[in-house]
Amino acid sequence: MIAKVDKIRILTFDDEYEKLLKELQSNGLFMLSKFDDNFLTNKQQTYLQKVSYYIELLTTKTKKEKFFKYSETTEAKFDRYEVAEKMIDEISDIHSKYEEYNKEKISIEDELSSIKPYLTLDVSIDDLNNLKGYKYFIGKIVKESFNLLKSQLENDKYIYQLLSEDNDSVYLIILVDLNNQNQIENLLIKSKFISNNFNSYDEIFDTISNKLNERLKFISEYNLEYEKRISSYAKERYILEIYYDSIFNKYLRESITANKTNKTLYIEGWIKATDISKLKSSLTNQIAYYEIEVIEKEENEIVPTATNNNKFVKPFEAITNMFSVPNSNEIDPNPTMSFWYFLIFGIMMGDIGYGILMIVLFSLFKKFKKPKGDFKDLITIFIYSGFSTIFFGILFGSFFGYTFDLFNLIGKLFGQNNWSSIVLEPITDPLPVLIVSIGIGVLHLITALIIKVIKEVKNKNYASALSNGLSWILVLVGIVLYVSISKGVGLVMAITGLVILVIFSGAKKKGIPAKVMSGFGSLYNITGYLSDVLSYSRILALSLSSAVIAFTMNMLAGMVATNFIGYLFAIVIFLIGHVFNFAMGLLSAYVHDSRLQYLEFFGKFYDGGGVIFKPLAYQFKYIDKVNKGE
Image 1 (cartoon, rainbow, N blue to C red):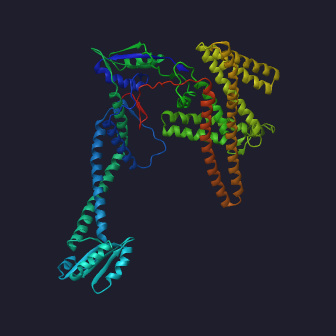
Image 2: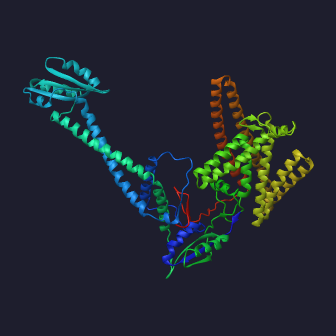
Image 3: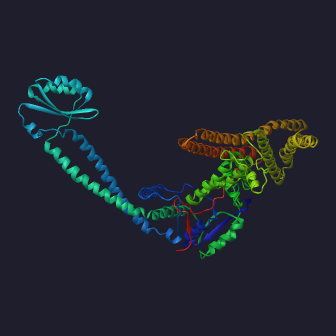
């Protein structure tokens, strides 16, 4: 249900202000009236990115984590920065050197790769430089051009030696007398010969000796030392994780601007009316002086929407909020919507095995991976829906696509062979499932219309309650009675509903002609309701498709299971087929169940457009909880 929310002002002295904000974050009861979610400055954002980068770096240096991970800390440790900041400085220093050295390593290796092809030269370049009357050219040429150049070089004018080659190029040295220098230079230019002149052969040798054997050795040794030091820091990664979350929340508090009086600071915001006493108790234990006063909201100020729902309903609020947050003045749709979502999801999945998988897999995921926010709520919804999936799986007699009659099995234990829990069979007899789907749709719509009536009566829009709510309830109930139990009673109810619809639809119109036209025009909405009811046939479609795919995969697995190899293939087919069917069924049920709630259910009464009540609280990326104390 929608909770009453009051606007309050909290006053304290300047030296108590930081403690006040910390306590408000800790108890998570108070929502600031003015707060920008994009509160980080560029400098703060850059620093947090740096810390996050080092955390991820340390993560890569640790052994693969266990499936489960849960971290807590205390308030004292949460606000202790010295160790973490020293750790960041040390990591930053060794990591910057690591990056610098490895850039140098790449540069050296690139240079060496350009020299390596010439190391097969068996003549000293110093000797070549001392030759009189001759000129030499050393370099590389692409293979296609070399094949053309080769015929020109094979004469008495030139001497050449092939040094090496790779996939693209040929490396060579050409010796020519000075009389033919111009001729060979023109020829090499046309052939796109790339010269690589060395001052001396010793230069090549020194480059390899110094850069490869000395500098690269030094860099390799540093890299080994770097890995050791980073691995040692990785064992204390949690220090940086706590620090990241702590500094983020510190930046959050720093972004909150307090109003000032002569002697005090104060902030304004919202709180559930029932939580004011709890807030006072919390602050009294931590702050020497504070004062809380309830104040009036500003004109046109939107009151945030807070809810008081039980553990079953609470996660379904995420489904509603994805559509639109309810406003603070309307009826909370979540208690009724959660039941229908739970029920329809179970029919769409409708398999005992899949339901067990949903409960086990998502319970383990929730317990050990600790999802947060809306994702946590979605996981919880899947766990709940696993139970309805099992329930309808029993009614459908389906266990991973195989026929499974639970009551018949139980009955045999007591000597009863005529017990059966199979009520509906989507594959062999889909018509009853279609009827049930349509029936659920009608009940779903009637529930929405009842909420509509209550809402309009509450707002004293009695004509709307009659024309947009009660009239259609009578029509829908009348049609159901007409086709099922009593044609007479059903016909009377349906006609009564239509009469109410015609009379009250034009109540706000001026003039009798306008009222009459509006009243009869509203009858056109019958087509809309017909379309809405038929939308629920998707329940049959999804339950049928899931059952057919499961049955088909089982049949294929059975067909190949004729020998040992066949059984192995059968297991693979079974696993792949059911994993695919489970995943697609889960996705389809989530999407189509949500659609039925958003369009058919909410479309009858829901306004939305509210602002979610989001109290000031710790925001965590890495840890899960901050406990009181040391």
